[in-house]
Length: 486
Image (cartoon, rainbow, N blue to C red; front, side, top):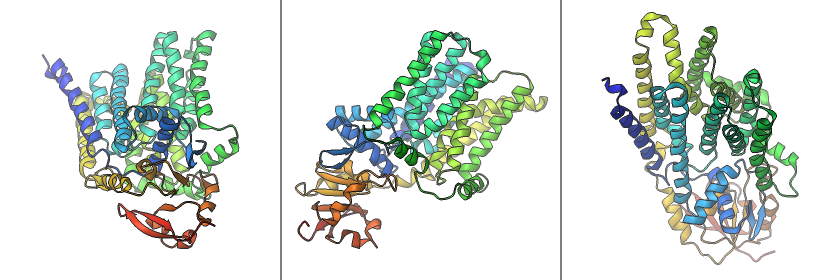
């Protein structure tokens, strides 16, 4: 019996991938990477829901702004609030939820590809994902990318079943998880929904659903969308603010030069170039199959559209790699099968060794991923950090009697020992939560101000009534009011 087809080998393969995922996702969990702005925004949104039952960001004691400028929706915030409700509020609790999402993403990815291409291709795809350093750099921190990708994979699973089996249950869940996916994060709404619609157009002749099934799918999709609107926006919120926040989020200037600058990155910087090469292999394999008149699975077409639109969003963004990270993960899922298709096409010599060649390339890439994750990556840079532990210890020791103003450092809120605080958080230059509260500092309303040390230097005049009295974790300044309230 061939050892590679034995149950023992398959079991060991799954165990190995699971062990890698568990190790990298839990190692230095609260320290690597450091708690940062967006994570703090989402964590306090989950905290407010758990403690106060409010979908919002606190801007003053017992005063909340809506989530209209927050890029993550209830599919991330609701599970986070549930964790806080059961286990208490803290970075460890929040990131433990992200470990679950990482594990679910890797597991769901394996199941999806196994259904389409078999065990070994699925194991190779899961191995590439499980060893990829950005999965942990962007996945351990509490943001929407990994949860959204998990929901996307589940949607693709039910989409595949819907086209093959035509069952009402599968059609319902395909619509439901598409709705959950696109409401997890604004960029998923912008890329995921058009990708799904484009897929429907391409495969319209293959759709044999009756009107009842179409209504069922539409209702399932709209349910999360309606829930997102209800939880994300207040009664007085304006759609123009949401659109402005979404499309002009960073005030990056003219789109043309920004687009050109980001395109150049795909030929001059390693991470974008890596995505470009993997994507080209995938696209070439699709072209080869089309030339051979082979049918492209519906999930692969949907995934390709999603990746293309995701890269498009990146090209019009400030150029942060996190914006094309979802496309990297999805590309890895289809890369092993793409390699097999290419080797099969290019001559009999390569065809005889296509399994060995493909396996060798995948193992080499997985080894490089693992080395980066362990030693040379964003997440590895924080393995020796103790910033979060220091923040927990030092913020727990601050005086709880004064009122505090959290000035554009939303990540510190989850460390505060009480809720007696004001806040301004510049998530968008014109529509920031607490923008109307900045004047409270000039009037000396809060007793103390917490600000990032680098933001205070050179802007001391903005805090004229306050003087530094304490430094937290060598990063944050606590300023105390030196005169009476005006």
